Amino acid sequence: MSLHVQKLLRLLIIALYSALVFALKEALAILPNIEVVSFMLSFAALVFPFRMAITIPLIFNLCEILLRGVATWVILYMIAWPLLVTIIWSLKWIIKKYWWLFIIINSLWGFSFGTLSALINLLLYGKSAFYLYWLNGLVFDAIHGVSNTVVASILYQPILYLWNNRLKYYIINFNDEIKVKPKLKLPIKQQ
Image (cartoon, rainbow, N blue to C red):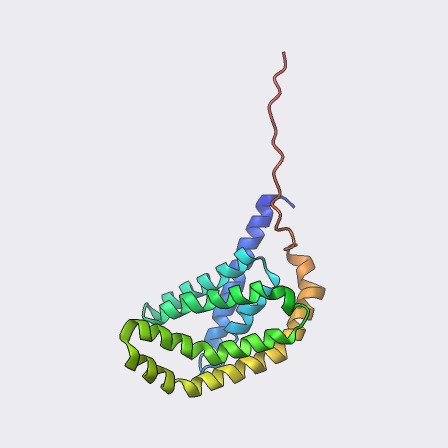
């Protein structure tokens, strides 16, 4: 497969995966703090190269901005989702050995998401806004953490099995992080 086709396929996968994350978030928007975004972005960090995985939350954030407009939550999303991808990607060698770490990281992410948001409010509005926002969101953080635990526990093994045994061979080989150098055709002067 040529380098151009590989790049095109990667762009297509990034776009489709980002759209899937966005659509699943909107489908579950009726439920408070029950979401699959953390799982989907974590899974992307586990199976895709870093450049692809880090691009997916950025496109997801852009879709959210286009739908909801710009507010202080944009700062949170621009920090939080790429941070989650970076954490999972940097630990993926150990997560592949001990799969339960994936569940623990997703669970802790859900429990700490409100605290991260409150820290941004601390920087923007001061100490009182931090405590108000953090205390007010403890129930939502509990729901978020428990739901992330349940979602990751239920979906991790089947989705990884599906990826390893069905999808990864049909889509593209992502183990080719080494750049393929195109062959140069040098003109040979004939005399």
